[in-house]
Length: 348
Ligand SMILES: NC(=O)c1ccc[n+]([C@@H]2O[C@H](COP(=O)([O-])OP(=O)(O)OC[C@H]3O[C@@H](n4cnc5c(N)ncnc54)[C@H](OP(=O)(O)O)[C@@H]3O)[C@@H](O)[C@H]2O)c1
Image 1: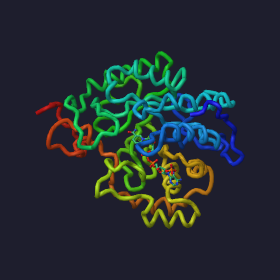
Image 2: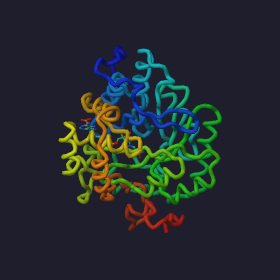
Image 3: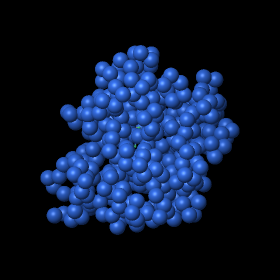
């Protein structure tokens, strides 16, 4: 990316002061929409980094990053450009995540993300997945790691304690979880010194996770919703024939028509009004601007919110197959559907 790119607040931008936020117990304010930065296979690192600057120009202050997206260094250049353009660090909300191969080494992982992003501290640091199972980027869903293990709570807590230490050291302001289930959160809430501020989870109209959503609300955990638009451009390897398409749902399409907006933007409005924090990814200025505009004007009506509440199909898109640890398992085993975490017997 060209380092000569200059940050200029956009004339048609949204005033960040008008963007709603979730107040956290620390007093921090989490903007209710963030920009996703996972380029998947089809958006280049440069396009993502350009979108980070462009999004800040139209009023975004919240960016969802992760070491495994393999673009934190170039996003760091964007963050420098944004700050050089007059946006103070305190006005930004930057999230990163410890990847599965760095469980137990979260201190090193965090320091690497800070160095790459060019930051002194993160606003939020997450354990990306509850499994320590590494798989190479862009591998097929049939790929299995020979070292793969199930969820082992003692190991997870070791990583969590490291995140708590990062808070004590001032390198991280909040810590949270991602891709958790109620049984796993129960154990964490029992044993944590610092409770998770957020749980980042897949949430879109066809996958509303009502029980986990309510559990988070009941325990003061803010749900951050990933793939809020239904991840329409996800790679072929992440698709199955049963998957449904939120932005083609006739109810969503009809509501979009009534508001004169794209169905994707309806998904963003619904998410923010329901009480989760959507982090849509977009590298298209018109779209990322619309996603921020979505939360400051023209809300969905109660009837529209209720209509979308009936659309849940339990359609999980990001199933996590690569984290399976033994033969003849199905991805459902990862999500504790019967309320029980599968026994900790790898290679059985
Ligand atoms: N914690 C986790 O395990 C986890 C897992 C998955 C994702 N995430 C995070 O969540 C973010 C979002 O998830 P995602 O990328 O899977 O899916 P998504 O945000 O549901 O979908 C992104 C796609 O939607 C399109 N789009 C977005 N806004 C639009 C609009 N207003 N109109 C039309 N099209 C629109 C984008 O295309 P254009 O670029 O053309 O706008 C892009 O192709 C990721 O980038 C990542 O930061 C986290």
